[in-house]
Image 1: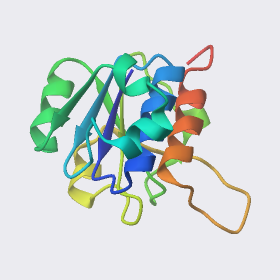
Image 2: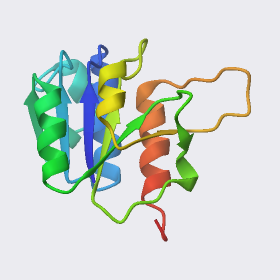
Image 3: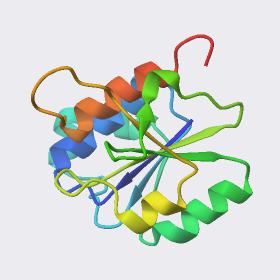
Image 4: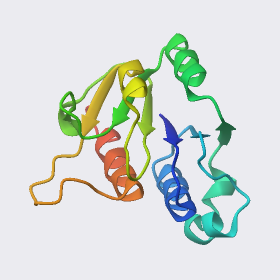
Amino acid sequence: MIVIAHNIRSLHNVGSIFRSCDAFAVEKLYLTGFTGVPPRKEIAKVSLGSEHRVSWEAVLEIRSLLQTLKQQGFCVVALDNTHASMPIQTFKTDKPLALLLGNEVDGVEKDLLAACDQQVEILMPGEKQSLNVSVATGIALFALTQEGR
């Protein structure tokens, strides 16, 4: 699995995403748009060394990255709660997966959502219908790496 962290503004969130990618053996983490990149003390403080263990690459232009991943046979899936999102626990694919994460405030941009093969969301029974992007990443990676997927 590949993770794409797009336009993540908080370096602490970036560090936490590194840590979750390390915990779930993500093949590669792409840091796109204005997402901060190591070395940064804020990232290192939260990642606890994961930025040294997880293969990562900074890419400014995400659209060409998505196109390349699709050409390589990846199923590109956006994690966002939109009208077109399906519950993450029901999502299945037999292709390698590229999970796209969006900005903490605005989520995944509409044109990027359209470029994805699918949109998934974490169902939340509470009143608040959003999670911090780094928390959502950990939950999504857990859900997507369960047996039988």
